[in-house]
Amino acid sequence: MTDDGIPSDRRADLWVGGARRPPSGGSYASVVDPSTGQPLGEVAVGNFDDARAAVEAAESVREAWGETAGHRRAAILYALSTRLRADRETMARLIAREVGKPLVDARVEAERAASVFEFAADTIRQLTGETFPADAYAHPPGNERRILFTLRDPVGVVVAIGPFNFPLNLLSHKVAPALAAGNPVVAKPTSAAPFTALRLAEHAHAAGLPPGVLNVVLGPGGAVGNALVEHPMTRFITFTGSTEVGKGIAERAGRHAKRVLLELGGVDPLLVLEDAPLDVVVPAAIRGAFAYAGQVCTASKRILVHESVAERFTAAFADAAKKLKVGPALEETTQVGPVIDGAALERLDGFVEDARSKSASVVTGGARLADRGGGFYYSPTVLDHVPATARLSHEEPFGPVVPVFRFATDDEAIRLANGTPYGLQAAVYTNDLRRAFRLAKRLRAGGVHLNDPTNLRWDALPFGGVKESGIGREGLRSAMEEMTDVKLVSVNFA
View 1: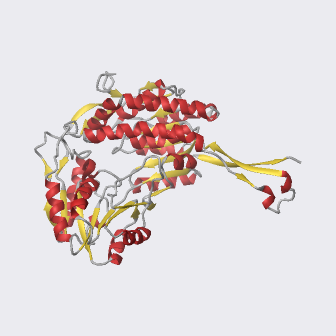
View 2: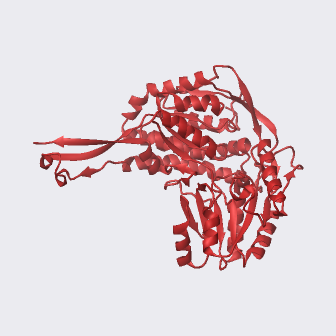
View 3: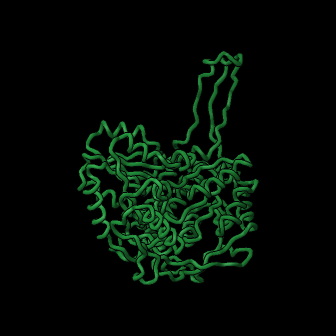
C-alpha cells in the first residue's frame, strides 16, 4: 500500500475470503481522476464467476457469523470505526481523487462512515424482539399456559450495491447494518472508486472481521450486479442509485422472493415562501443545490419561489452561484469540484439546451468549463422561467444545474412539488411555522426539512423515499430491522 492509499501495483483487485484476488478473466479498466481526466490506476473487471465465488465465500461463513455473539460483532465494528477514524485523511484523499469530491467534504464523509460503524455496533443492543400476552387471545385454546415472544434472525447473504457519489459512507450504510445484524456481505461498489472500497475491506479484516464475512466484487452491473441479485444463495439486496436501475433490481429480486432496500433518485423541491428571509435562504439554497456539484440524491434540484420574491431571490441566488470557487477536489479552497465523467457533462448540456429551447433563461452558467486542466467541470448554473414541459421540471440532472419555478399560492406550490414520480426529500422556508407544518403534511416525501435545505441526513435515523424514490428505510436500526427475519416463538409451560 502506498502513502496515498492506492496499492503499489496501482490495481484494485477483488476482495474474496479475506484476501485480494485478481479477476478470473484477467481484465482491468482505468480509474480516472475527474479533476484532471488522468488515470489513477486500474480496476478489476469482474464477471459471473467472480460474483459466484464471492457469494460462495459469504455463504460458507453465514451460519458461523450469524451465531457470533452480539458483543463480539460489536467489538469488531467498534474496532473498524476506530481504524477508519484514524485513517480519515487518507480515506478522504482517496474519495477526492476517485470521484472529485472537494476535500473538505470528503473529510466529512470519511468521518461519517466511521460513525456509521460505531452506530451499528451501538444498535446491536437495541435490536430486540417483542413479548405478547398470550392469554389476551381466545384461540388457540390453552393460551393461559403459554408465553409468546419474537426473535430476529439474520436474513442471510446481503448484496450491497453502492453509488459513486458517497463511495465510502453510502457503502458503509449497507455494510455496517448487515454485519451488525449477523449477515455476511457481498459488496459491489462503484468501479469509479474501487480503492476506497478495498481500503474499507482491508480495515475490516484488520479489525478482526473473519474471512468471507465481507467480500468485494468489482465490475459492470449487467454482469456482476445481476449475477449477485439472481444468485440463489443471496437473500437481501440493498442498492443506492438511479430509479431505472433500482426497478430492474426489484424485478429480478422479486422473481426469487428476495427482499430489497432501495434508495433511488429524486428531484427534490425547496420551497421559498414570501415571508422567508432571503439572507438566510440564499446561502442554504446554494448549499442544497451545489454541494458536491449537485451530485447528491437529496440535492435541492428544483427551487420553487413565491412570485412576489422570485426576482429578488433569483438574482441573489445566481450572484452567489457565480462566486462559488470551482476547482480540483484536492484544493482546500474548492467549493464545487468536477462532475464524475464526460458522460455527465453531456447529460448536463442536454438538460440546459432542452430548457433553453422551451423558453427558459440562463441567469448564470450553462456551459462546461474547459480551462480547468482536463477535468470534467460544469459551471454552477441557474435557470429562470423554466416551463413545466422542460426536463428539469421532472427529471434529475445530477449536476450543478438548478431551475427556478414560481408559484402564487400554497396549493400551486404543493402541486409543483408533488408533480413528479419522485418523493425523496423536500424543504420549506418560512417564518410561519403553522403554515410550514401544513405544507409538510401535504408534501409527498420521505423527509421534509423546515428552514433547512433538502440535503440533510442523520446517519442513525430513518432515511428513504416514497413513490419512485425508493423502497424501505436506511438508518442503522431501520436497516437492521429490514435485514432480519422475525420469528415467533411460543412456549407452553403447562
